[in-house]
Length: 226
Image 1 (cartoon, helix red, strand yellow):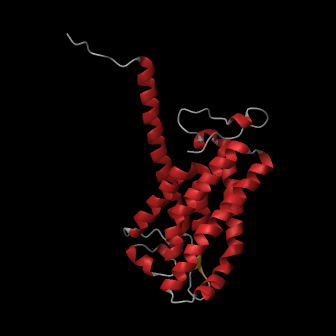
Image 2 (cartoon, rainbow, N blue to C red):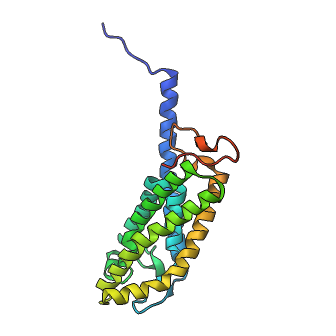
Image 3 (cartoon, helix red, strand yellow):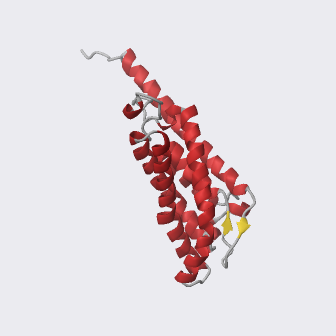
């Protein structure tokens, strides 16, 4: 005779926690995708020969990675990009649709998800190892480096192809965005650290302690990025 097996209270509790964790992840992804769209709505400032505008999108993209880590941060940005390409007017200047990939901003837009992923990996690595000013510096250098290695090169390539500019001219045109990029990364790191202090579990991987081992003494720091 077969016997029915019932779940133990402990396994049921773990299941409920995992379900709640997944729901929380989905909610955070949706909230940060909406936040990115909100920053993109702010009036852009067109500059350079191709007219690619200065916006707050890259600030929000960096913030996604720094706050949510690589996978959730990358998912939030990917959701934003996909919805924009499907036609929602959530790119800069209230634009949307697949046609933006034929514009001079195409390279920057397609780099957003990679930028969030890279920044998220930097956050996960740095928060495990540093505290205080060292953590701030590591996050800033990592976020800015991710932008310079991913966002700017793909943006230059997009300008060159879609605006019919020589690569050298497109690279020089891209330099106008660097000062603003530095400022936006400074702000993104500062805001991200404030969020981590207020909500230390936001970077916690499910099933892991909320405070990283390196932060058990002294000032508490966030746990491991997901």
